[in-house]
Length: 150
Image (cartoon, rainbow, N blue to C red; front, side, top):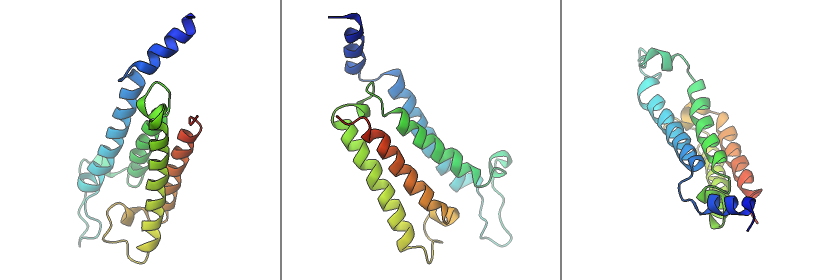
């Protein structure tokens, strides 16, 4: 057995590689950022008078918080599309690919079905037409998994 194939075999058999742990961390931090911003830092812009969110530094970023949260989430998914992670090899690739495609499709369909009145849907109500970008981004991440499919 050559040295390069021994490393590849060892890399593929490892359950929790550093790359996998980093991808999980990015996904969790991205989702946490979105939840924290929407529930705490956003405040209530529909109240009269509007309620300011806290901490002020995060609230001042405004809609950029969605870019940060979804960016970290998508980056974590992209990092996990590597053979050294469980989602980057074998059946994990197919599951992650189809999962991302379905989440993107459901996100866009939900936006179109409820586009007349988004006020009751969390996150959707702040994003408006940017919901299409979020849905397409999930599908793009699905294509990154599709390139790993053998």
